[in-house]
Image (cartoon, rainbow, N blue to C red):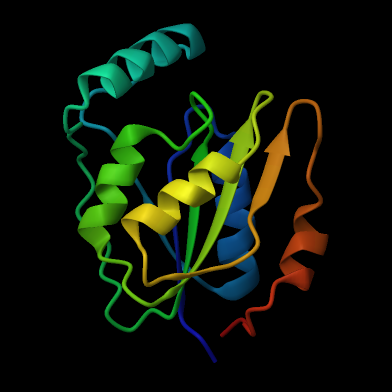
Length: 158
C-alpha cells in the first residue's frame, strides 16, 4: 500500500472539495498551503497574482513544508491563475522536495487548462513521476471519480 499526501491551496473552497474527496478515498494526510497574507476577493487576487508574477518575489506562506519522508504519492491541487499554479504554491512545493515521488496534479479554473501548471511541476520537480492531471473548470466539470479510477497509481485506503 502506498502512503499519500494531498497538498493544496483553495481560494474559495472549490479546490478544497476535491482535495477532501481524494484524502477520503485514499486515507491521505492533508496539507493546506496558506499564504501569509490572504488574497481576498477574486478580482483582488488576480491583480495581486499578476503583480507577483512580474515582481518574481518570494511569497511567504504560513504552512511548514510537508513531511514527505514516508510518502510515495503526492496529490497537488491549486486554482489556475494566469494559466499556471499560484506562485506561492510553486515556491512551497520547491521547499517540500518532491524528489522521485509520484506527483498527481489537480486544479480548478474559470477557463484555463492545466498544461502550463504540469510543465511548471516538471521544472520544479524534474525527478518526480507526474501522472495524468485532473482539471475542473466553469465550462467543463471534470469527472473526479472516473479520473481517480483511471490513475495508474495503485492506491488503497488504509
